[in-house]
Image (cartoon, rainbow, N blue to C red; front, side, top):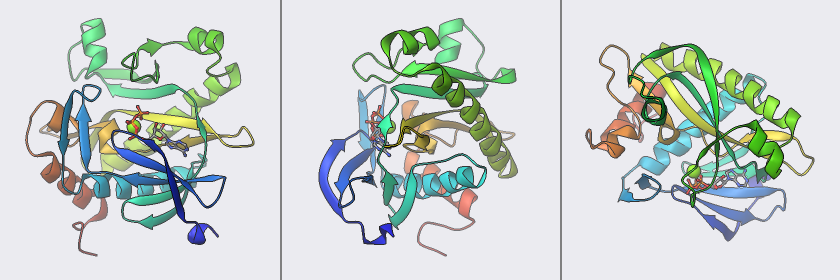
Length: 245
Ligand SMILES: Nc1ncnc2c1ncn2[C@@H]1O[C@H](COP(=O)(O)OP(=O)(O)OP(=O)(O)O)[C@@H](O)[C@H]1O
Ligand SMILES: [Mg+2]
């Protein structure tokens, strides 16, 4: 059906994607760019192939989520960098799931990087670039009207389900899923859909054995060439390079 949907005016230019209106009022057109940013936009670069790797991995993983019974915003893959998705009102709560301690949780609580958690942990951050996405809890969401109680319960439940599917997926490829961030939104009927992206930009992925980063930490921490890392990750996922198969 939505094969005939056309790209409309630019709705939002983000750091990693452009979101366009489309010829359908219920859909947006999402284009993945090669731009890389870190530290809330302080560090910037253009990384060849990054948009394509992210778009193709996200489309693939969203499909997996859908098969696992988690409704997502994905509708149609229109090109290697462009997706038509159900338009949602993004819930301004970034949902982070952690299996292993790394990044901000180590800084906040003085924990050792690499400490394996006994249970996966779901954390909420308020989605606000101006405020640097501060940590938040249910009381803030309820008090400030960002989400209601059942929605918060659903976000936690769905995030843990996403984690279980992703963890098994990466594990088979010899990769430890350390943590990841996802976003959800409400469609026009108020149903919650997994939205935005599931990509190595928003995940920490460590090669088993070496604990080498296969994600955007390569860029954040200058650990190597992010383009090479993403092309390598693509090959791990699909079994072939970007231009093959
Ligand atoms: N289905 C959707 N409908 C409407 N908006 C969406 C949908 N999926 C994702 N978005 C929003 O589109 C934007 C995508 O752009 P991008 O990811 O580049 O933003 P960003 O600069 O990373 O900023 P943000 O912190 O908002 O993600 C995000 O704000 C995201 O919340
Ligand atoms: Mg984003």
